[in-house]
Length: 478
Ligand code: FAD
Ligand code: NAI
Image (cartoon, rainbow, N blue to C red; front, side, top):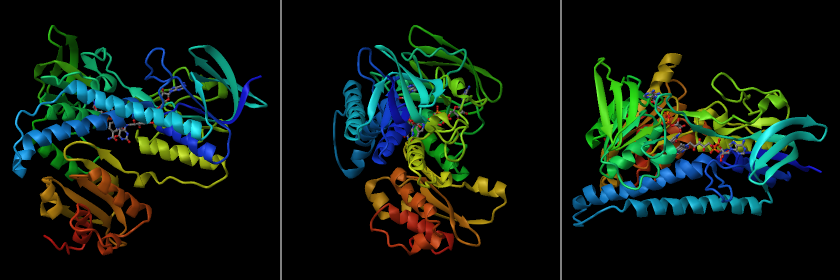
């Protein structure tokens, strides 16, 4: 007889594993199947999805190592510290990253055991429905088994989009998987796409000494960020030596004796060839829906490959939900997690809700970039009256002490009600500072609420308060 579960989750990334844990906490019998795109042959499936295995966590480990190296080489002398002969052992740096990944993925397995979640090792696909529930085939290394579930949560995530005439081998021409595994810093690195991965990974190898050239098809970059933030980022990245070429058209990429050569046409129509040791292709991601056999339960993807869902992540098949990168909205781990919690709580009869407008974004460059809510350009196009307050890190004592005084925080509030509509940061610890902006927006706070809240001194968070004060032109330290 087939195993039966209340809830079956397909995919154990941040969306799926969090959905499984929350559903188990709420008393459901839960299984989660994972075939793991990140398996080493013969090993158990690695849980945690893109985020833990080839995304957020390994990349941020490399960001931290490369930042520490750059600080040691370029900034220690400012503190009066002499440290001669500083070098980087990239193999050791990669081992540190791998150890963090192994610890985190093993942590998810521990959480499955703790919450009595059944791990089904294999690829899940729909086979139809009968009176006992949805029939799901799990195809694993040891063959196939069919299980039944009352409710199904599809959390199969996404994979890197590739460009037709550029064959990714993850050795010389890499997507996110190969780009995080270099065993030495390339002398010359080419990157196609000045999006989040291009900027973060490009910055890692630039800090470690690579000459990095990023080729971007659009006439500008960081289009989703507030214009003032992308302008500042462009200025700072140029100063750091990150070459970003905008408005290019990519031609053929060829493997050469020394690496890769890539042909492109610049924004004036002139043809060029970029020779590099390694090439990274980071031009977006596509949802993973192949082999799910959605048709067996009457579902199909939209024209961009996403599974259509409503505000509560419900598909049109009753009891089948989809969350995370496989559905509309930003491809972010915390978005996938929040959707996982929401669906589990819905199944338990609760009334959860996600406000996508107060979902923060972070880009882990130097300095970090983070925002929540609306940009000025969005508000202008909506015809909404707003006011802004901006304060630089250069006027903050803590930032100066840390030697991290580039950038600013800008707060945007409704001209009449003073409700905060957006917070935009480029500066040190933006990834942590933005949480205050997200909380303020979730509580529908006004800029005056933030301005009246006592902030610790000396701290970077004072820049947030000063930005709020600046909205009414009463910043105190400028
Ligand atoms: P995934 O994490 O992709 O997990 C899906 C899982 O489902 C995978 O384990 C896959 O093997 C499994 N699966 C697929 N099909 C099946 C099937 N049929 N049966 C069984 N299992 C299946 N986001 C952030 O918020 N912050 C960051 O700093 C950040 N950094 C990133 C850096 C990089 C380099 C990349 C590539 C992404 C980054 N992201 C970041 C995005 C983040 O990783 C994703 O948004 C997040 O992982 C999506 O979670 P998910 O659960 O929807 O899918
Ligand atoms: P992206 O969508 O952020 O950027 C892709 C870039 O490539 C865009 O600027 C686009 O204009 C450009 N592009 C597309 N086709 C091109 C072509 N043919 N030639 C040149 N340029 C081209 O995608 P990216 O960087 O691959 O990241 C994928 C997703 O992963 C992100 O959207 C994000 O959701 C997630 N991510 C999140 C991170 C974070 O939260 N810190 C970090 C890394 C990834």
